[in-house]
Amino acid sequence: MAQARGQAQARTTIPNDLAPYWLPFTPNRAFKRRPRLIAGAKDMHYIAADGRRLIDGAAGLWCTNAGHNRDPIVAAIKAQAEELDYAPAFQFSHPKAFELAARIAALAPADLDHVFFCNSGSEAVDTALKIALAYHNVRGNAGRVRLIGRERGYHGVGFGGVAVGGIVANRRQFGALMAGVDHLPATYNRAEQAFSVGEPDWGGHLADELDRLVALHDASTIAAVIVEPVAASTGVLPPPKGYLQRLRAICDKHGILLIFDEVITGFGRLGYAFAAERYGVVPDLVTFAKGVTSGAVPMGGVLVRKHVHDAFMQGPEHVIELFHGYTYSAHPLACAAGLAALDIYREEGLFERARALEPIWAQAAMGLKGLPNVLDIRTVGLTVGIDLASRPDGVGKRGYEALDLGFFEHDIMLRAVGDTLAMSPPLIVSESQIGELFDKVGRIIRRLA
Image 1 (cartoon, rainbow, N blue to C red):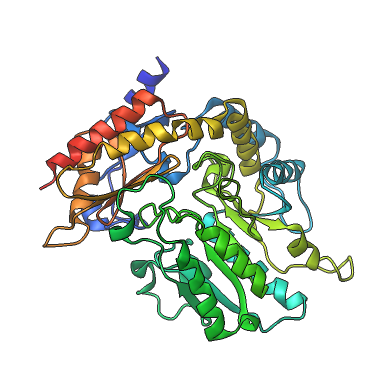
Image 2: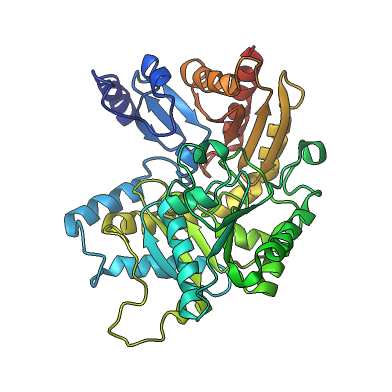
């Protein structure tokens, strides 16, 4: 009955003017000619504005790990809004901020014991970069100002995140961005890694490129290296075996901080609370967002190791240690949603569930091998990247058509990254729904000219 009411309501929520809203990361003119409008959601499905149910193959935007509109999260947000709508983040706080920070720190490995809250993955990245720069400064190494990212890396859309990021389309319109930034090479080589399940055997040696950058710039100028454990937004590039471990060793050798951007990989996507646990590597800082609230309320943050945090706690107690923060850091509604989401992850064993489903997911994904125009398939955790051959008349056209076909004809929500189809379902996905997802994707691929 509730579902029927939701579908009936969805049919009435089509706006009469699409012009004012400038959509992010969207070809606006094409979208507004044929809009893909969503009016509702529940568990594994979205509800389109015309009432159709679409299976969610992308966890929203890599974020609804517990599924959509989960009752405990909705109830927690409502209760919090009635009790405390907002508390100032500077010089004051509220109890749930401390409770959530403790819960997140308890999930993190080793001594990643401190949490700095913000509101998005982009803010989390810029926060982590600023903490890294300030850390060296307060320790008397103010010359360590260089930041190193990686080609094809995505670290949000702040000036710092775009500067250390390595996706060309995200950078070319905005000029120099920041000085003193360099990049490691991407870890992907189709000739060596095609159709890999999990971490590819080839490519661990690419971490040694960090030694080359140290020799070029000198370690005394380098503050931090930032990488995604799995480069997801560029099309799902798992780390080669041994790669992250070698990065950690090189950073240790030269006194460089290592930052893992886990905005996507955090909170169960790879079968663990954080990818750092899966790979047995402890970075100095970890960025998170998305899954911390299962996408219900915007929130992000940075996990910080004890030695980094404690370096700031040396001056007079009445003086601010880090001149950084956001009006909505640890917003009460976000904290309530985060606590409820963590409860669901724990009570339903969703991280463990993702780990158990990983081989089933990989087998279903590899069933698409051999379909027309499929160049490569990569899986790790509950993620997959499917590379399609580009059309001669335009890169990205085949991917965009797949997105359209999925929404309008096959009732499935996908991510298209150029001509790569990316999937990462909510962790509540069932085995039968995995079959449904890949059956629909297979039919879409066969339709593409």
